[in-house]
Length: 104
Image (cartoon, rainbow, N blue to C red; front, side, top):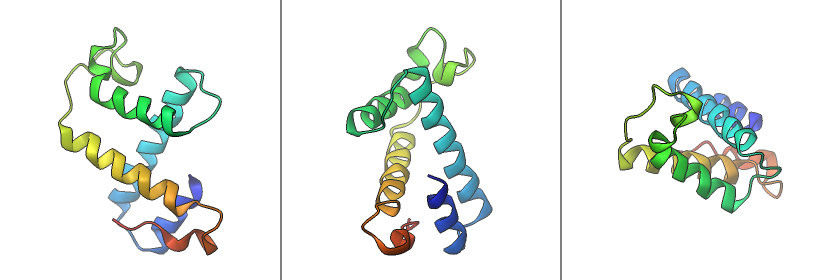
Protein backbone atom coordinates (compact mmCIF):
# COMPACT_ATOMS: atom_id res chain seq x y z
CA UNK A 1 0.00 0.00 0.00
CA UNK A 2 2.88 2.35 0.71
CA UNK A 3 4.11 1.81 -2.86
CA UNK A 4 0.73 3.04 -4.08
CA UNK A 5 1.17 6.28 -2.17
CA UNK A 6 4.68 6.67 -3.55
CA UNK A 7 3.30 6.08 -7.06
CA UNK A 8 0.78 8.84 -6.37
CA UNK A 9 3.60 11.20 -5.43
CA UNK A 10 5.53 10.31 -8.58
CA UNK A 11 2.38 10.90 -10.64
CA UNK A 12 2.12 14.30 -8.89
CA UNK A 13 -1.32 13.70 -7.40
CA UNK A 14 -2.48 16.47 -5.12
CA UNK A 15 -1.69 16.40 -1.42
CA UNK A 16 -5.42 16.06 -0.78
CA UNK A 17 -5.66 12.99 -3.01
CA UNK A 18 -2.67 11.39 -1.32
CA UNK A 19 -4.06 12.18 2.15
CA UNK A 20 -7.47 10.74 1.20
CA UNK A 21 -5.85 7.56 -0.08
CA UNK A 22 -3.68 7.27 3.04
CA UNK A 23 -6.85 7.57 5.12
CA UNK A 24 -8.47 4.82 3.04
CA UNK A 25 -5.50 2.54 3.72
CA UNK A 26 -5.68 3.33 7.43
CA UNK A 27 -9.39 2.49 7.49
CA UNK A 28 -8.81 -0.74 5.57
CA UNK A 29 -6.08 -1.76 8.02
CA UNK A 30 -8.32 -0.88 10.97
CA UNK A 31 -11.10 -2.99 9.47
CA UNK A 32 -8.86 -6.00 8.81
CA UNK A 33 -7.47 -5.87 12.36
CA UNK A 34 -10.90 -5.30 13.90
CA UNK A 35 -12.31 -8.35 12.09
CA UNK A 36 -9.13 -10.30 12.81
CA UNK A 37 -8.61 -11.10 9.13
CA UNK A 38 -5.19 -12.56 8.42
CA UNK A 39 -5.36 -11.80 4.70
CA UNK A 40 -6.86 -9.22 2.40
CA UNK A 41 -8.59 -10.87 -0.54
CA UNK A 42 -11.81 -10.40 -2.45
CA UNK A 43 -14.05 -11.47 0.44
CA UNK A 44 -12.35 -9.11 2.87
CA UNK A 45 -12.59 -6.20 0.43
CA UNK A 46 -16.28 -6.88 -0.12
CA UNK A 47 -16.78 -6.96 3.66
CA UNK A 48 -14.87 -3.69 3.94
CA UNK A 49 -17.07 -2.03 1.32
CA UNK A 50 -20.15 -3.39 3.09
CA UNK A 51 -18.85 -1.82 6.31
CA UNK A 52 -18.52 1.51 4.54
CA UNK A 53 -22.14 1.13 3.41
CA UNK A 54 -23.59 -0.22 6.64
CA UNK A 55 -21.12 0.60 9.40
CA UNK A 56 -23.47 3.24 10.75
CA UNK A 57 -25.74 0.38 11.86
CA UNK A 58 -22.97 -1.27 13.91
CA UNK A 59 -23.50 -0.75 17.64
CA UNK A 60 -19.96 0.68 17.81
CA UNK A 61 -20.54 2.94 14.79
CA UNK A 62 -18.51 3.07 11.61
CA UNK A 63 -14.78 2.55 12.23
CA UNK A 64 -15.55 1.84 15.89
CA UNK A 65 -16.61 5.45 16.41
CA UNK A 66 -20.06 5.67 18.00
CA UNK A 67 -20.52 9.19 16.57
CA UNK A 68 -20.35 7.93 12.98
CA UNK A 69 -23.98 6.93 12.54
CA UNK A 70 -24.86 8.69 9.30
CA UNK A 71 -25.45 6.58 6.19
CA UNK A 72 -22.96 7.32 3.42
CA UNK A 73 -23.94 8.09 -0.16
CA UNK A 74 -23.54 5.40 -2.82
CA UNK A 75 -20.86 7.58 -4.44
CA UNK A 76 -18.74 7.23 -1.29
CA UNK A 77 -18.70 3.47 -1.66
CA UNK A 78 -18.04 3.76 -5.40
CA UNK A 79 -15.12 6.14 -4.86
CA UNK A 80 -13.59 3.85 -2.27
CA UNK A 81 -14.04 0.85 -4.58
CA UNK A 82 -12.33 2.71 -7.43
CA UNK A 83 -9.44 3.79 -5.20
CA UNK A 84 -8.96 0.27 -3.83
CA UNK A 85 -9.03 -1.16 -7.33
CA UNK A 86 -6.39 1.36 -8.40
CA UNK A 87 -4.26 0.44 -5.42
CA UNK A 88 -4.40 -3.29 -6.06
CA UNK A 89 -3.63 -2.83 -9.76
CA UNK A 90 -0.66 -0.58 -8.97
CA UNK A 91 0.97 -3.02 -6.58
CA UNK A 92 0.79 -6.11 -8.79
CA UNK A 93 4.27 -7.61 -8.84
CA UNK A 94 4.06 -8.42 -12.56
CA UNK A 95 3.88 -4.73 -13.43
CA UNK A 96 7.32 -3.08 -13.76
CA UNK A 97 7.72 -0.45 -11.06
CA UNK A 98 4.09 -0.90 -10.13
CA UNK A 99 3.06 0.64 -13.44
CA UNK A 100 2.49 3.98 -11.74
CA UNK A 101 -1.07 2.79 -11.26
CA UNK A 102 -2.17 5.92 -9.49
CA UNK A 103 -4.52 6.78 -12.25
CA UNK A 104 -7.88 8.24 -11.48
